[in-house]
Length: 104
Image 1: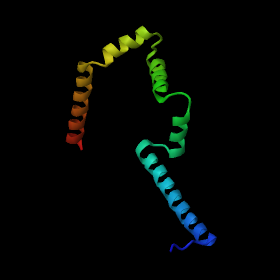
Image 2 (image 1 turned 180 degrees about the vertical axis):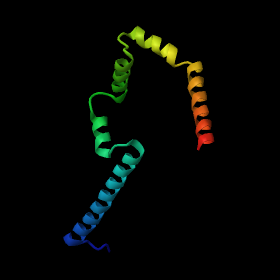
Image 3 (image 1 turned 90 degrees about the horizontal axis):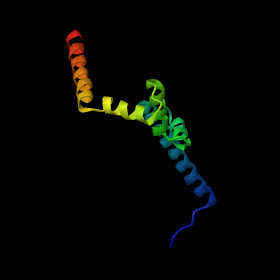
């Protein structure tokens, strides 16, 4: 036979469960702040925003570099997104790390 729980017992269980969920929500928000620099509420707003993060990024890139047309974007990508460019920045990063290690 299964014992039915009273309303008081059910309420206590729901309150305990709610407290756990609230703690998980706080932990998630803290993890977002640590990993992404903003709280979970801000991230949820960004995700629910009608503008996609990618298009926002593209808008910022276009504005910063003065890219007005699709041809400007194509030229920018052909220059900046090459193996040579990637290697240049990778080597620069490694050299900067080595310099910092020697100085520090």
